[in-house]
Image: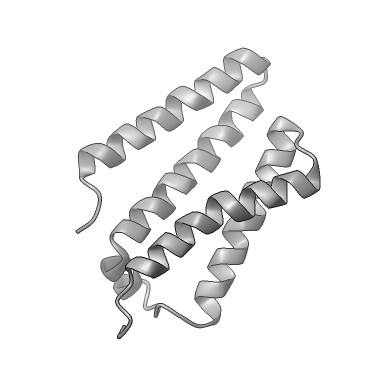
Length: 117
């Protein structure tokens, strides 16, 4: 049972509002666009995790192995680098934030995965 489509649409709308807010507050269109892309990507990851069986079936992935580990590491690094580029976070702090924030999504997804799969 995945996320309802109206919930996903609201998450994308919130991403748009956040992107427009960053653009307005910082006065830089590129920062707003990077925020929009980062939040939409995060929404897509959450949506993909909520529909885990369908997502992994269509991508021909299993719940373990090198591709999953690469996905975890890539999402942590990308979110940390976006935090450093847009909000000028300190690098170590951005990686700690990314590890806890993005890592919690991945841990939740793996906890939802049946142990036999």
